[in-house]
Amino acid sequence: MAEQPVPSSQDGTPDYDLPESAAEGITDDASAINVTRDRRRGMRNRIITIVLVAVVLCFAGYAIYDWGGGGGASSNPYKELTGIDTTATPEPERMNIVEASEIYGNTMVHDNRIGDKSTFGAAAYTLRNGVPLIVGINYFSDEKQRSFFKLTQLHKINGAWRCGEETLRYDDMGLLVMERDMLKLSGENIPRFEVIDGKTYFYFVYLVKPRQSVLASVDKCNLKLSLFNVESTDIIQLDYECEPVVSGGSTLYYGEVVNPRETPEFEFLSGELSRLPIVYRPSAEEIEMASPGNASRRWQADNDSLVGQLRSGRQEVTFSMLHYGSPLFSRGDVDLDSKVSTETYVFYVTHSGTVFGCNMITKKFFIAYVDARGAVPQIEINSNGTLHVMASGLDFDFDPATGRAMLN
Image (cartoon, rainbow, N blue to C red; front, side):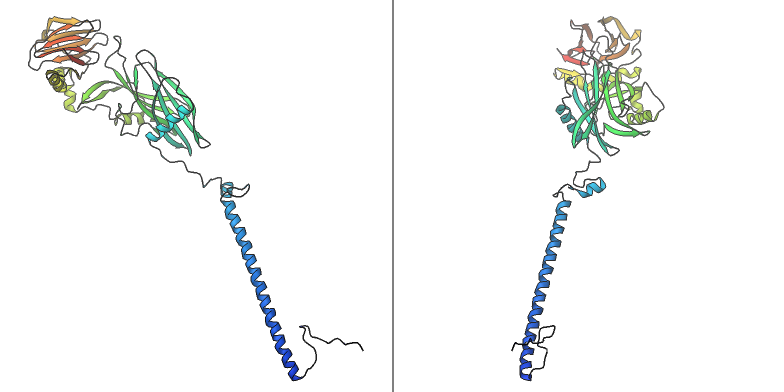
């Protein structure tokens, strides 16, 4: 007879009554089975949890890697969303003249823009509408060729500076001086950028000195304060016609503006002129001393120590010379027989020991020497056009074009 299957419950335990002793044993086995089953379920849940955590960490690591530029096509999602590259070095708001001039010089050499024998001048930097810009100056002048200066704009392209527009200007008035030290601009923020009446200008200053020619004025200079419009490339200039003045052992320039105008640009340039350290601003006493009537006193005050150096044996000094637009003596003051002259200059000696001179081309008067002892010097013209002065205890040659006195 075939065996009958034993009915069982859904959890697998027999589904009929058993003796107490037998049921007791089965109950213990079922408890053991349930404990084992719970342990397996707990283990499976822990494994699933660990796997899920690992997957989440993997996705997080990839996201960080991709954000930092290490993943696929989206190297910087922040830049794609905002247009701002947070890894790029931002452009500085300001850059000093030395740094800008160094970049300017290096870029000009790199782009082969130095073929005209010109000298590198200074440069300045600005952020114009958030875009970096440098403008620098090259200049050239000598005794024979036309003087010129060139303004070059530098732009930053793909992180590198490159030369852009050039603006050339000639100046036929003489020799250009743009060295910041010679213009006493070492402690000044010049050149620099200025926004005037909504326009961006590059502000710079230079001096024009006369060439050493018999036909040129040997004393008149022009200090030019300039604004260069970086858009239109126009140049606006304030022309300060001036003469050199030695004050406190330093050469300054004194004169007047020859082209005044009533514009915002000229108002700015006039304000700058009033502050430039190279401009001579005489006191009331100095103005009085600068009058023709005090010319001899002024010459002695400016040159007394230099005359003493010649007397002590120094071979050469340069006298301080002021030039006047009116005669410094009357006919009765001078010994008419003392007159000597060249094609350009005429000299007289006064009865009180002063040697007066006149540039017949420029019609300007000056003093070549004053004898503090009142002795009357003897003068004659050397073969090279200089003036030979024989005074008490002194014998020297004087060059009226430069003011140099050379001991014989």
